[in-house]
Image 1 (spheres, rainbow, N blue to C red):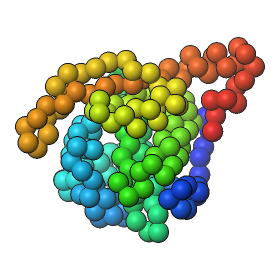
Image 2 (cartoon, helix red, strand yellow; image 1 turned 120 degrees about the vertical axis):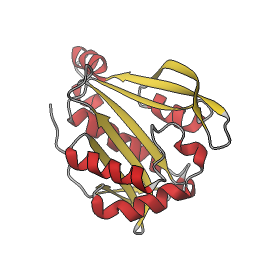
Image 3 (cartoon, helix red, strand yellow; image 1 turned 180 degrees about the horizontal axis):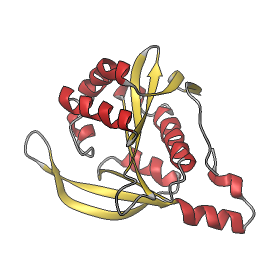
Image 4 (cartoon, rainbow, N blue to C red; image 1 turned 90 degrees about the horizontal axis):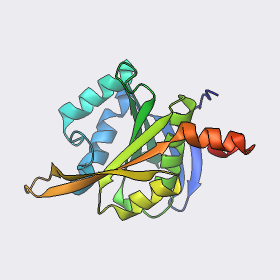
Length: 197
């Protein structure tokens, strides 16, 4: 079942041609520039503030260690999105992966987020993960709808879970997708290809 995906990979979106490629240390400055242009509110659902150079450096170290896989969405040489798959094979949940995704304001509503989330989802399937989770602030309705369209469902609401730079607290919603259960249902109905991209 393990499918190896190759990169770079190109997709056509309403924003134009987007290249997906795996993030590496050479991308550090470009990703930092991307993160620093994002509204702070868009970073609240991430465990750490990726617009800080030391956080970005630690992120690259985790990629090199193999704990994280990050896909960059690049348009005309500029990073416009990032989809990350985080897993911890040494935890009590080695079968679970977390998807984290951010997209530039410039390309929102133009299919880049959808393509990036589908590609990240495909990476998770290829890694053999049985369950996926994603979290965001409750007001990120477009992102919630996007992940629900991929089969994710709300599983938890964490009240006052994050605090922004102004000290205001925000709720976080956690969505989950039981990939193994969906795959088993599809196979029972003779549709195993339906969960593959």
